[in-house]
Amino acid sequence: MEEHLIVALDASSMSAMEKIVLALGDSVSYYKVGMELFYATGGQAVPCLLQAGKKVFLDLKLHDIPNTVGQSMAVLTGLGVSMLNLHAGGGLTMMRRAREAVDKASAGNGAKRPLLLAVTVLTSIGQEEWQNLHMPGEIGAQVVHLAQLAQKAGMDGVVASPQEAASIRAACGREFLIVTPGIRPAGSAESDQQRIATPRGAIRAGASYLVVGRPITGAKNPTAMVQKIIGEMGD
Ligand SMILES: O=c1ccn([C@@H]2O[C@H](COP(=O)(O)O)[C@@H](O)[C@H]2O)c(=O)[nH]1
Image 1 (cartoon, helix red, strand yellow):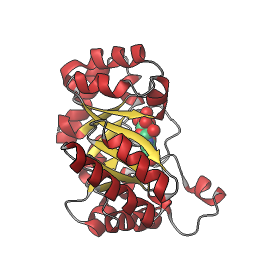
Image 2 (spheres, rainbow, N blue to C red):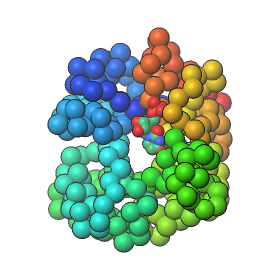
Image 3 (cartoon, protein in one colour):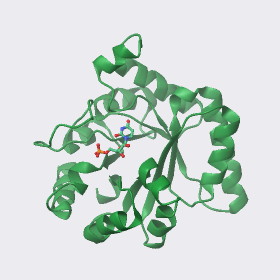
């Protein structure tokens, strides 16, 4: 189960990142680099993790016109990460252009193609925020719709809340990847995350990978928390 846990490195410097990675040692092999760390380190966090033998999910959530996203995805493909993502809300054409660009760039550099994920509806969006946005219908229905659109566009999977994992699995099949942030072990502090579940709940609902940040990086003993989460995932 360890390889299905992705630890979110939301840190603002190389030294802060290294401190976490050093503390977690061999207990974690997959890390997520998001906007904060990528921008703070001028992208250098990525080669540093790769050189340390870690896998990287580069979570930059691209959302722009198809040409811009396609060109940017081609550049990011050259970094050698295992996963890249974009917002499904950018549309079918944008997602298709991204897939074409990643395919072409991977063929060009002879490297393994990174998996492409589409973010459906952010896990921080709850019912109240959904209404603020004037979005019709239920969040869950929109998530499944976006997952199906992403699948049609050639995405390998989606980023979604564990609360929607079972419906996405039913709609998109066994092979489609479901990567779930919004993971909160029992007893976690309240946070900006709204659509949450425990590690056990997420795996039982059909999640392929769990993304966990603050419950691990903010824990008194981060390695013990990793072991607890991995244990729960395997139950
Ligand atoms: O819908 C989404 C998409 C991405 N994220 C990212 O996952 C981690 C979660 O961190 P926690 O500290 O465990 O809340 C964070 O990097 C987000 O940018 C998400 O939470 N929800």
